[in-house]
Image (cartoon, rainbow, N blue to C red; front, side, top):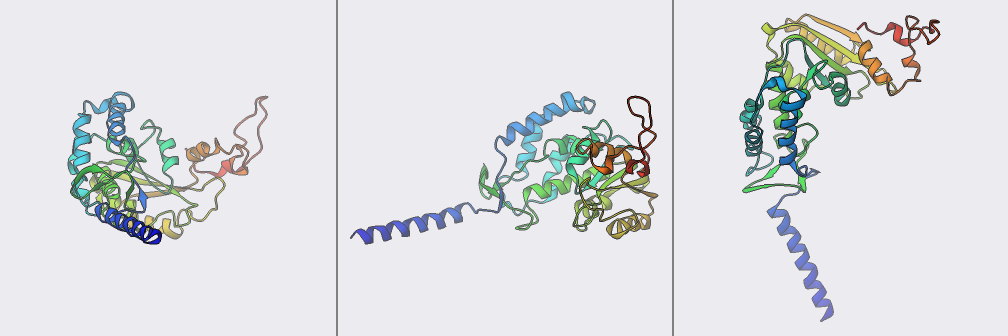
Length: 299
């Protein structure tokens, strides 16, 4: 009798687990970021009040509703970039000429270098990029709720809520970039400085408006403690240069651009790559010895 009871318990548990999976499919990715609504609305107000008040008034509650309605009550693997058109339009603003900064494989460096739009305005420094940065989200079919347990990854389905949002954001960012365009690539990236497929290759380059662009400046910067895998004129960087030139753009490329290297060297002051040139003087006025920074791209 006791063994029969245990068998029934096991069967019941297995049934409930199977039923749960049918009701709410589980994915490999992290679930929706907790307090997502508060974060998105809060970031929206932070942006228009503190980070970039020049964009003018935006209805942050309306932006949240448009953002949420793009993916709730839908199969989390059937979200398309066009589903985010309304929220992008509601949060759209001018990107100053000569300020656009595209990138691959170095998001944190780009955020530091752009300095919230002070030096450059990367995608993450626009309003629509700012409120979505480093967040995760997805809904569930036939449910107005968010899935806080798990969300699909790119490997599980291409048309997931997060990647489709960033595709639409990347397309819009490229379309509104003008003047001198800057591209910061990681010369130490194992998968290549210019990955293809990739957001820059597939969604941003095709949407650049050639008549609004005067030049494209590429910076290939190695990690301080990383290998020098790629440089201007080699491997995938050469592929990128050739692609842009074929499209008719004026292209320049610099290895280890000095301004970016100085920023990296803040965290590695004693690394040999961060030795200052003889043009910099010590406290007592005597010149410091020549070092690797001497030969880096000019500011």
